[in-house]
Image (cartoon, rainbow, N blue to C red; front, top):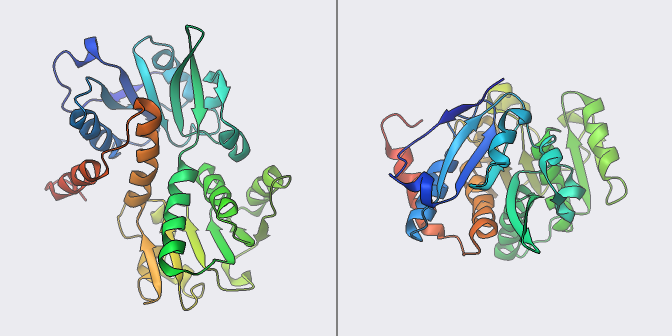
Length: 295
């Protein structure tokens, strides 16, 4: 099984003088990650290039990871739980989460090695901390919807934000219980069968499932007077979960694109040892979305 490469606006000679960065996943032709990272590379006058590499399995992109020009990668579904086999080391947080979304090329004693990391959690954590600092309210209850690779980062970020009661709901309860089991030595997750079983209104809600698998009606009764609602999906920009949250004036909403940017800032720092040019990266996204073909 080969990989599909989607290349956009590569500068002549970049493949010869710079490092190659990629996003690995399946069904990711719409990804805005190349727009975000290539804008940052250009801002810092770095000769690197970032593109999309689609593959049904992580083995299909192994040759890219092993290439001497490889500079790093973003990893999305369905590869977050399998890419560890191509990592020489894994950070403590990625190990705890059990999912990797970032590959970083490191050097030790003159030898090159691949570090597996997770910036999904830190991107989410930064959003949560900003909300807590802004409102001055300590969240007591968190809810994560979905039990895939992204949910692990969401749960871990709630734990790091010191949220006391953390609930998880998933269409397949046994999958949620598997995630609960994976974290049991670190913190407690309370699995519920359905949103109707939620015993209290959450202060933070994180959606981690594709928008086309849900409806607004599903989320009708989960919002209290105030809180923070974060969506990790970004097609469409305003998902059914966010639409419902926006009907409650006391709720701050964060789109999947904002989550994507937040974790991308941390990725960029890991890859380049340079602070991410946040405004440049945001402007690139806004310009991309103004294009007629953008949704």
